[in-house]
Image (cartoon, rainbow, N blue to C red; front, side, top):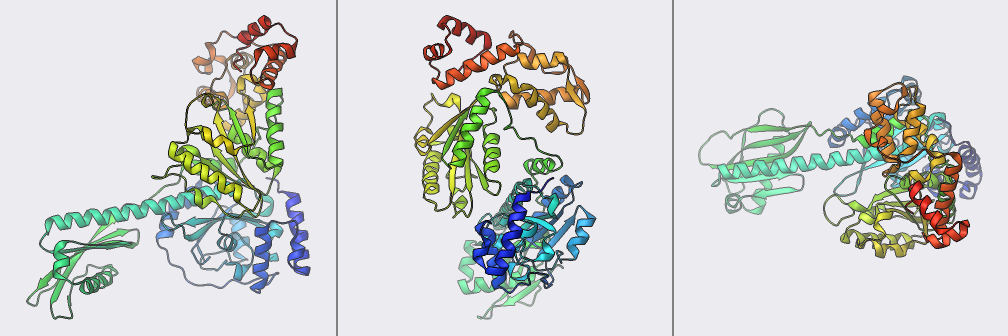
Length: 611
């Protein structure tokens, strides 16, 4: 995958100027990068060949919850020259997976290995330490590294957040050679780090639920005995425990139980309290991985010399989540991506031009169009085309809620050091509560000091509805209409070829002339998404060679619409453009076209135009 030559040349020149003249020489690079160079220099990092220190690391909760994600990442990217690394909250490498032995050997020379410290203060700007310092995902490519011995590499890291506290527990990093780096690695690492955070939440929820369930069962069986439950953020005691033991004695029992549960063999013991009473302690350890997640303790007063009970173990199943979305991103790394912004039909080019102009002016923009028309993809591609070093953050309005797993919008806000675009998908699907939260979020984005703004997408069908999202439209300045597939006749062959390439990149597949005619005749009410489904259906029937009309789904062949000639296609696109220019006013459009209204209505029906 080709590197961004301009970015690297600019970074190399800026780094040389920075080492010579300090911060003023770092003009032309992002504030995140310039600040990292300053921190590295202030820490006394050797700009040619820094040396990392080594310390033993221990596997724990983070490693356990990361393991399934790392293994899936390794599988998904097995043919790519990558090395995947996980660090702890002190920037020490915990684990490394080498997909490329060659890249791994090169990274060995710069100490990217378990136990070594990759903080900025130790190694300068890099994809682990800089993530901690910046508090956000970071890609450091080639000469953007502060140290010369790291400049052969490109590393992209994302923070792994504690889902409860928001604290950074570690960093997931993917490193490769600088010439092999792709911007899609940024998306892949963020998605995988989110998977790990989800595992942390599931693991903690499972552990706490197991402690609670075990406590309830023990209390039900021994209601007259003292029963305690201890765990991360958990302390429970039944009424008998509260009656028999003071708060100080309860704490003593907890500390003793904690000591006993660290012993992996079966343990039994008694403890003598300050008032002389002797207590026998027994119970159950709840074990997740190699850690004790919690303990349920039954405490019995003993009046004669007798041994205590023992601790049994309840071993929880491993949490293993690696989402399909992350795997799909990893799959895209193996082939060049074809942008969708290159269509040539007039309605599409106008939408692209209008959106690009709004992007360059950083104006809040609303994209509307039919479901599946490619609105979100068009926004993302246009933004990163205009701002290659910019950052885009996607928010699904349908998931913005005040309870449940909704979007934590406040966590997305910050002081952008470069262009930052918030893409709000499905704005029309926001609930009443979601509208209130989004209203505050849009206002907060507008108050940010850096170059940050919002773009939202919605369906045309919602514009005439009474859904609660309408007040949010006041936050936008520009509206861009994205045409449906049936209004892009000139682009249909190219879109079909692109989809076939994306679905089956290594296969030799094509449409037969008759299949091309079937595709051209159908109206595709769900647009590109439906066309992709139809092609996937056809490829399951005929995995290689020439796809026939009979291989396409039956619904594609139920329309009576005839195949448009090039002249008809041009006329149809001209009519659609005129209607859009006049907001669907047929009288004005017919006057603009110099066409009788009766002729226009006839052609609207013939071409299936619904604008």
